[in-house]
Image (cartoon, rainbow, N blue to C red; front, side, top):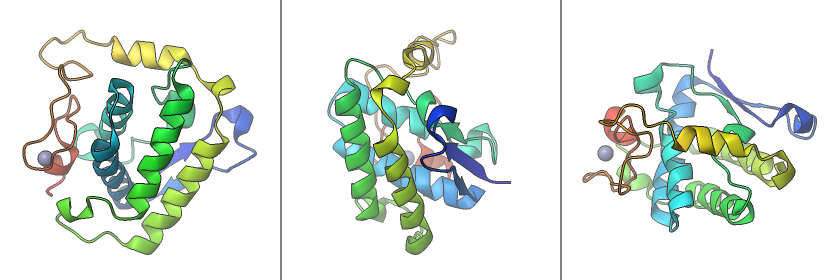
Length: 176
Ligand SMILES: [Zn+2]
């Protein structure tokens, strides 16, 4: 039950996996999607948020959205900037950036604990462990032209002003 976020095997001894209930996972992804959508400037930054938003349990299935940190679409060339962006996204999410866009009040104590652990994992993750194929495979997956993995032009939800992924808006899909 639930979802786990882990460092790649080589680094797992440094920070053990983050386990979350299904409900908590949804809140976790939603606050990061909001915060990241507000902060993203470059296309790579927008894409990291779109990738996270794709982990939408309402669409892909409850308890199926766990991932390893090296599966995220990092690029070797911009890794430091991308890492800094994700860390800022986490910090701002902890500060409640954009939480008013949610239709519910997150349980702060649990959520902050999870975000702190995710922060520690991202801090620990380094360029040597980036798997460039993950970004390439993900971004080139456009077999279905009606629904590309990365929506063309980086459209945002009209209601929630967050980036849409191939599943649409994670907040709309989950009732906010
Ligand atoms: Zn929306």
